Length: 441
Image (cartoon, rainbow, N blue to C red):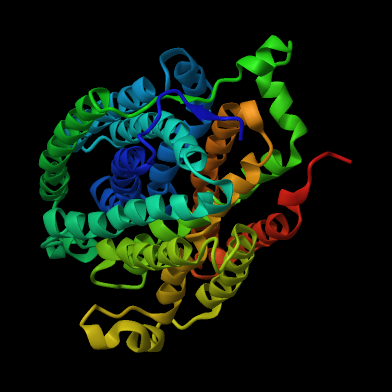
């Protein structure tokens, strides 16, 4: 890929993989907390479904607004210092949640989420090239799958922690219970619920500051992924990357993929709440559990038994089938969950929610496969291409809002999931043809 590591890693990529793995755990913890925050803030701030999904918009739109500025920052300060800066920015975002919780001011919550997303933008831009570049290209999807296991493992744990810490004893906060109170009593109840967020976010702030110090003084080597060769040739790297169809089409693939991934992970709690599922705050863990299963397939099967291309094709096909299951599955029967894990004591869910959770399995290998396929042949443009791919994460801001609008305007949350079908069809196109293109015709 034309990339090298400035300092050798003692014949091993274990150290950088371990350190980056810690960062991917943080990505997962902060990102997938949104799935539990959405129904929580819907109650606290008295929002409708569309307004509640501004949580995902504020968080993921940061990747569009801040990707270019953060790529310039990385060129100035380097990848390692950029990671430290990203963690410090995230700590500021976590701090903003404290006054937001104390005032129940939705705009402050959104500001905190945008700031957290800004910090994650620089972290993602810095860390993903590491995973692609520190080993053979044909096994890049396997390495990203390892990171995905860590990331989604955090996504599996955080809704359970949030439910146990914040969403216990929610009976007094049901819409029926709140309707019986006077306005003053209702406001007092909601303020007490909102204040449950203060302590968790104090701990999060401390953890982020500690991790920033750890990365700063760690022996993590610096990557040499600058675009100096392009610049010396008199070319603008941001113009040059657009001559690579596999990259541009890959950005679109990531846009639609992150959109459907966020819809599957972050709307499942809201959807379950609407269907009267008691443990709605923990439903994101179901999606994450199936994503972990999908990443395990990637770790053990790529590239020995499954190529990155085939993995992407299978992901798109499963995505189409499971989306149809969400749309037309039963909201009353829990047969699918009974068969898969009813014997284990895990609370079962209706079939339509089960198919939504299964999308986690379909989505798991899209990100690991698209990255190496998109960066194929970019050479010294790798860092610029990476920043462009990170901008594709904006799909997590836009597409859940589209779903929220369709669900709210139609009054049919279940059938509104049809909007994921064209997304998976595009991923299928990229898997079969888009990634192979090397010139525009």
